[in-house]
Every structure is written in C-alpha cells, then in structure tokens.
Image (tube, rainbow, N blue to C red; front, side):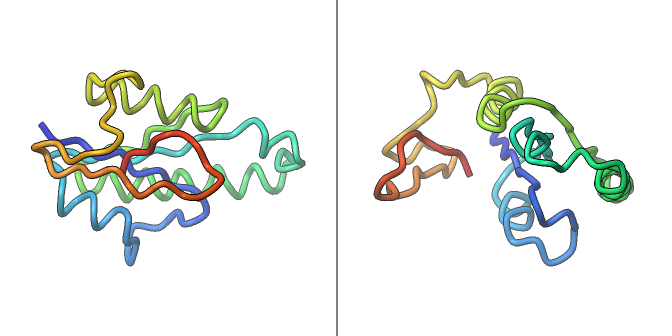
Length: 123
C-alpha cells in the first residue's frame, strides 16, 4: 500500500492545499500530521491566547478531516523525530530503509538534494 504523510505546519486548511491534494491523488492512504514542535513552543508560542488559537485551528482541521473519513494525527516533540516515527508507524519503513536516491515501484522519488542540507525526506 502506498501511504503519504502530509505535514501540516502554517497552512491548516483543507481547501487549496497543494501537498494534501498531491498526496490524495498519488497515495492509497494519507496520514495528516501536525507536530507541536518544542523548539517553537520554547520560542514563545506557549502564550495562552496563541495556544488557544492554535488548539481551535487544529480542532477545526480535525473536524474537517473527520467529515471526510480521516483524522488529524497530533504529536509533540522534535519535528524530525516525530515525522520519522509517523512514517515508520504507517509504512513499516525505518529511517534505514527509506528510499533515498531512486524511484520505487510505488511512485516515490527522492527530491534532488538541496545545497547545504542533509538527510532524506518523504513526500
């Protein structure tokens, strides 16, 4: 089964969302994910009014996904570690077995490396 994880960050909407549309078009299953990044919270995002606003936005996003038969996965912690965990949980891949340079039979293709950045990514 071809599974895509869509990481929601600043764009918490379902309409006109290119990464979500691409995942829905290409995958058998889509896992919508939001990570409460501790680094962002440590930078001051834990003010009560900001936290309440974000909580409301996430609740609205989850409600919209549930209307469509899905649900929002919300994790807390290091962004990269949490994305890796969700990918592993939903695909069976570990970070050691993720494709990194070639296409697999499932239509996944690794992006071209960005100068100055390291690591692999999923779509």
